[in-house]
Length: 256
Image (cartoon, rainbow, N blue to C red; front, side, top):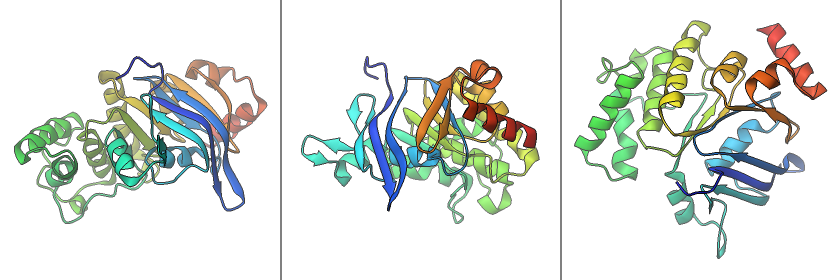
């Protein structure tokens, strides 16, 4: 890591889909090792932030930096695929859908990317995978295929797969939204353990308010492409400054 105070920095980022402006000159920073959670109504632009960091979308204005290095541009202009591929190795993402390879067993799902993208030997990749599967409570499922696992187990495999790439930044996009309610706690417990025992920088989008409260260093309330307010969770959840935050929390917590 560099000595910069930001692991992630959005500098005046604009993102549009047609005439619809999703992000409006967004400034956002996340410190190394910090766990930041984005909350807010659906369609407010939260997932777009993660997709821009994963280079699944391109910015329409502004720049994004990861550990001081520009993700979106090089000295020659807009970043080319070679630069994006290099930067992508530093960032992992766990999606709403598990996206496991159905024809591969659990061990193969976790070792595939480190072997292909990082050039690890099969032995190195498998040793790393076994450690990670033990961490997420699935050491007895290495030979199972995704179809033989519950949704919660599949999501924990997806988390292990992302961690196998040794990312500096891990992005979490509504990782429990596709799970049955009784499976949510196990996945959140694993993520909380990872956050407390590693120096990975997390940027998380979730509707799980209790999880956001328990694990976050900072929570950002997001609406209409902008940060409404941000604060440590104990402040934002108990004494928010902005009426928009109060109304959102009231609606979400009443539903829960």
